Length: 233
Image (cartoon, rainbow, N blue to C red; front, top):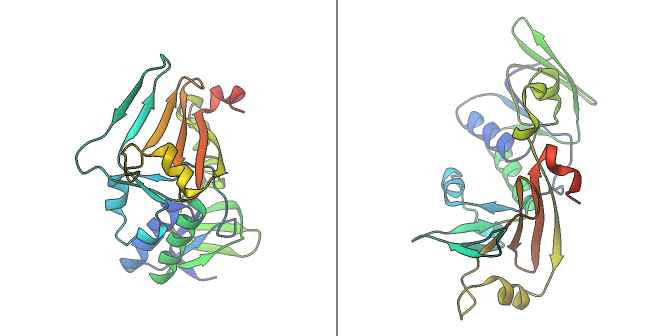
């Protein structure tokens, strides 16, 4: 079995970007993801300026809409608009965005394996072995980017160290609308060019709701601490 420099488990944004950066710096990298891409992912899909700056490639073709402000709706019923000079964020669809990041990792030389779930991890004298439903993999280094419920956090005894107040859960849905209707609802200027995002506090305990505009839909969701999620639906 070939021994890689780095094994990345999980093909979301963190795993794909990590794998790509490692490959660009000369490491032999394999990334293993249990799902096929593109795949649905509950998320608002908002990218702030710092995230955009950290990704060193053009994202313009992925952008559903740009946003320039956030409207914060408080439990009291009052609303505040938050913005600053030169603020610009992107709204993307996670299935498209994540697939793009996987493709960029492949371009950098990462071997990407989809549809193979890692079911066990073994510590070796020199490195690790990951056992998959399909193939297995050896590497000197392991990055667990498979999320809070992934095999990495469970088997490496990380998961139980996270208290419920430090773990979040969310649900989201795409509501189809004509582009003109999205612009009517979610823009703050008379020319309907300055989109904003809505954040709602007080809908759930220790969490918030959101309404984000895409080209022809609204992304609506709720997120909160996992120990407060009983009434989320």
